[in-house]
Amino acid sequence: MALNMAAQMAAQMAAQMAAQMAAQMAAQMAAQMAAQMAAQMAAQMAAQMAAQMAAQMAAQMAAQMDVKNRFINRATLSYFLRN
Image (cartoon, rainbow, N blue to C red; front, side):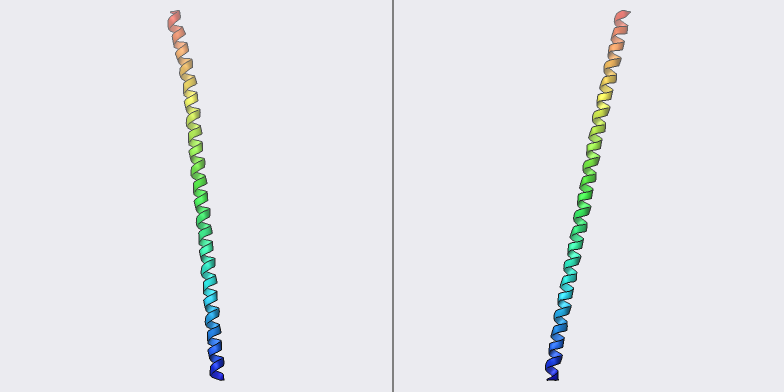
C-alpha cells in the first residue's frame, strides 16, 4: 500500500515537473519570439525612416541646387549678353 502511494506521488511529481518545464519553455520561447519580432520591426522601421529621410534630403538638395544653377546661369547669360 505504501509502495503504491509512493509510486503515485513520484509519478505525480514527475508529471508536475514535466508540465512546469514545458510551460516554462513555452513561455521562454514566446517571450524570445516576441522580443525578436519587436526588435526586427523596430530595426525595419528605423531603416525605412532613415532611407525615406535620406531620399527626401537628397531630393531637396537636388531641387535647391537646380534652382541655384538656373538662377546663376540666367544671371551670367544676361550679364554676358548685355556686355
